[in-house]
Image (cartoon, rainbow, N blue to C red; front, side, top):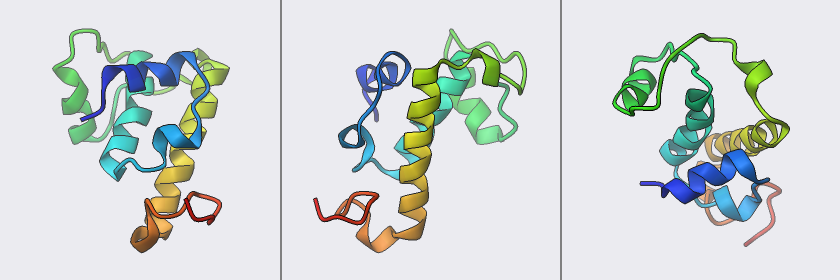
Length: 104
């Protein structure tokens, strides 16, 4: 599973493609959702909600937390989404090419 240091980096530093390009879809989803969870996002998806319910700092407070996100978090969420979309579109090549289509 993801190391805590990788997840916390998404909140305090701009991530680079090297931070996410070879992660599995479940890891990308967790990274993205962890940012939302730290701001109290109340997940509609039961599996997502259960994943964070067991964490002591998670307190669901609502579904509109966009105004609580920092610029760094917004950019990092966008980066994760880019790789999630790339994975869905390029499953066979995922991990062999970066999102721009260049070979690693």
